[in-house]
Length: 327
Image (cartoon, rainbow, N blue to C red; front, side):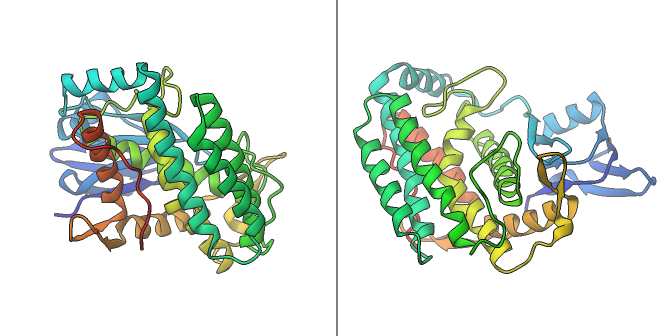
């Protein structure tokens, strides 16, 4: 049976009845979701739920992710992990505390991110100057001596990358600069929404492994956030999220009613979110022939494989090398 995430936009109630999840909207209409088919839940509406329901999810190991009214990630309920490894947890902490070991991993995440930024830009004319800047920052990142220095390189590379979006989209939805608190134009709204969903999907994949999602290497671990998901998301945002944005804009798949403006603030409406998520799910289920495994794997599986590669590195079985799309 194929597991898949469910995106819930309606407001109302969500409850357990025997071994089935029921989503009841404000009109009293119910939809059944068999627990065996649920990979994760993503809640965009305002729903009521009780501890009985959360216990049910926990028993079956199903994470639930919450987004605010504007579609930005708010938090997650992640069941107590059944995949616990004291040895791996010690190694994760050891690699964070050792500056050299931490910097190696942090550089690898930036390397994967900048590789995929450059991969995207090579498909579009007029992006040569942005490619030059990103390439220079990528080279500097290899020589960085500290994580803050590395973050500076990554930040400047990403700034140049986002400036290229107007060229890629031929100015159809102009963006002055990357602004995420709050996003002030449609492209910024798309980037913020896509990155939020990407973060939660990576968290769901981390949860299926023995990794602790709160211990990270590029981003600083802090209270109340799963920062390892931020690290790994860096590799996949330009690989998965950004091509969807280009497709939606360049093929005129988004309309005026897919965005809402509020006093210097732009966000996706339900119709806009649904259009993005349709493309997002299709991308995650797209398969490619894996060079090492000699079989087809989906983009979603590639995310989990990245987690396993990190585990092998921490256990000193194999040096971690970030995914670099070869297709």
